[in-house]
Length: 279
Ligand SMILES: [Zn+2]
Ligand SMILES: [Zn+2]
Image 1 (spheres, rainbow, N blue to C red):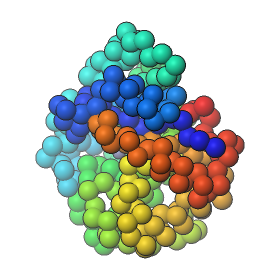
Image 2 (image 1 turned 30 degrees about the vertical axis):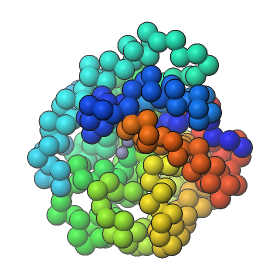
Image 3 (image 1 turned 90 degrees about the vertical axis):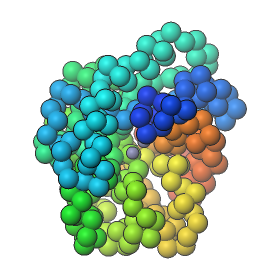
Image 4 (image 1 turned 45 degrees about the vertical axis):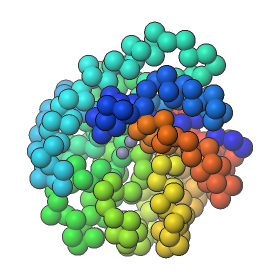
């Protein structure tokens, strides 16, 4: 089986992509070259409708978070939707989604129903701890771990959970050094993984294979083993999978087919294991 979708793509509308970040046209060109038939755009997004209390958590990136997310409001990301509607995308199916955010103050996600209804899909990470977690929780590692477990459980059980199609880069905290990230995985027991993955399977929330992180995962044996343990457990618990490059530029998508295939082969995935929302 070949993966022909990428459901985690950012354009330059995502501020962290910078002014030279990816464009719709650039990704459409990639799609032809990489054999992708579905592109799912998922810009970073905070829905003003949920309020801004959570943006003032004293996180590692705390200083920039209010500006970052207040700028990436619906009007801002809707520019892409207008561009998609005005573009002949040929044989490529293009979907307008968001990488929404976990909202720890309101114990849910930072997207309202009104906006959710205008999107093709929503993915939400439990691991944007650099923005949404009090930096005091970086140590001990158990506190960081417990935050991500709780985040995932709240994402999957909040009233908006029915709109959440996948957990983006599960348990891969952004900006944390690789060795520390691996240490966090090692202190997540099989039982805890099974509990949260069973919950995701019940709620029909897919496990995202984030191909953007794969080159680092496959550099180091412990990192590889710990991630593969997580992937196997997700499959054993009945989770469906979606694949996303997390590209912020066209170049960031180029390894997507190669790493998708590696994971399909590793986990012996078939069509049945692929999340319905990507089909
Ligand atoms: Zn992310
Ligand atoms: Zn992303």
